[in-house]
Image 1 (tube, rainbow, N blue to C red):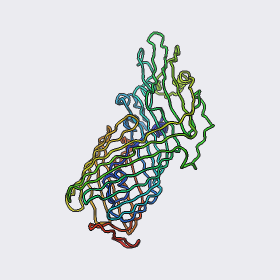
Image 2: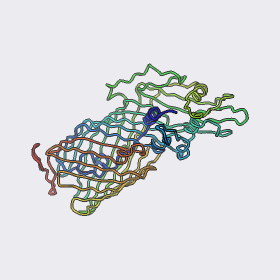
Image 3: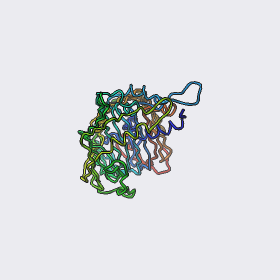
Image 4: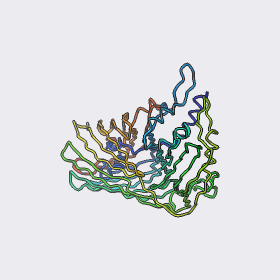
Length: 460
């Protein structure tokens, strides 16, 4: 029996394809400058902010958790794969997504009416949307698809890019502020399927078990080591240069937002982020497989036979079926960012205690992923701010997060997560995110709309 270590290594390879959605708790963390990432129309409370390098990571898995796949065998220290149950619970669209961002530097400056900011970040993400039939076919073989067609086409994108953003906000009245942020994007690497029209299907004849593969599938790459025309050897002609943070793969993004304070207690906000694209023109490869291929006498055996795990049972079949001719070209292409919108309201129950609600949506590669959240935020003077948030996100109800920021003189440290449960039960969680960072903050915009500059060593 394969032990837990071997299974864990296998699952780590799968987990690399997990994604994440945009954080929600940051929207309510008003004490830190980075909260305007979700709404560029939000005015900060400090005259000058210098954001030092910070990191953000996120994963999201709509289909299953680690413990859904692995089950302990009673009386032993071994585990068994539980993919039959996992597969039965999968939906039509199953999403893996992972994201990692580094905010290298940001600077914000505010007067009584205007706010300006600039930032530089490096962002990376992997997204995959696969059908239930794909995992079922690999795990159980094609015995359950006799005289049926299994759709196994997977939509994916893996990419990294640099982002230079310049934003501004204006306090039109005491109640209304608006803002926008323009982002120059420089694509570093991309490997993605075409968004529309891709199909890959496997049909098994009921009489002679002939396997027919139908493909109409296209994918692109830019500065990425890809699979060549036989899909059996790595193309070594394409090298990734880590020094090219700004190259010929250019694009633009736009964020827009506004806040409106109805009265001293109640405030509304709305924003839309990441309206944008990247044009990929450097070191391009386009691949297309289109046609119908029939193979006689080939079947997909189950991946597991008895108590043994055998990749060779399916490996030879895959090499036979997918050794097809692929057309290769070198035409530029475009990919879109994952656009997001926020609509929120918050109410000050008592002084320094605020509750809020948020509607969130993310649109990416033809899918819409919704979210809803409620929050509570407590400020302890200008020194400490603590908040909690509960959220529902695409098929996940168990999300309880927290955000904390503390200020000692001009130094402000902060940490935020939308889901605490993975810290205590990492193997039972479908999503997790974390942002940590450090700011230098100076000055304060008071209620009389005057900016008061503080000395660096002076405490509030």
